[in-house]
Image 1 (tube, rainbow, N blue to C red):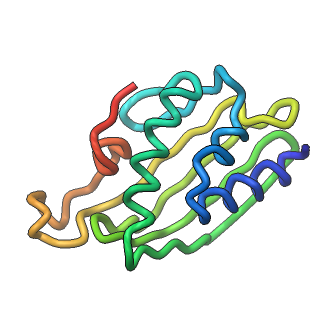
Image 2 (cartoon, rainbow, N blue to C red):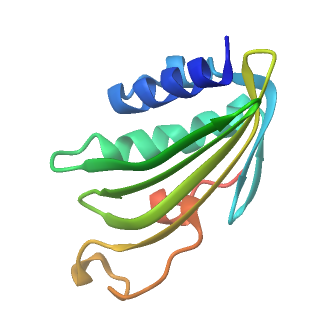
Length: 138
């Protein structure tokens, strides 16, 4: 599979909330770099996506792709989203694909709580993706 094939499959599975499908895109020892630190291996990546899917599958969630680029073994996406919990004013993912699998990925986002009632300041800049999504650690 090409990098474009993997990226398209990855985004399709994300949109469908297909955990098995999204995890099948990764090498077993893949590393996902986050502002909270790297997640090593499919098991750690699974825990993150379980939390992401729980947030994004609630009613009212929206996702908008702003930019999608592929160059050889590298892919980059820029997106925005809004869920019941958070507004993602800007988020990016960068992927390195080797032999038809994601070997490494990085993620970063500027997100803030959807409402002040969430218990956090509405104007808080969040550069800690896992904490925003639910507090999982590697």
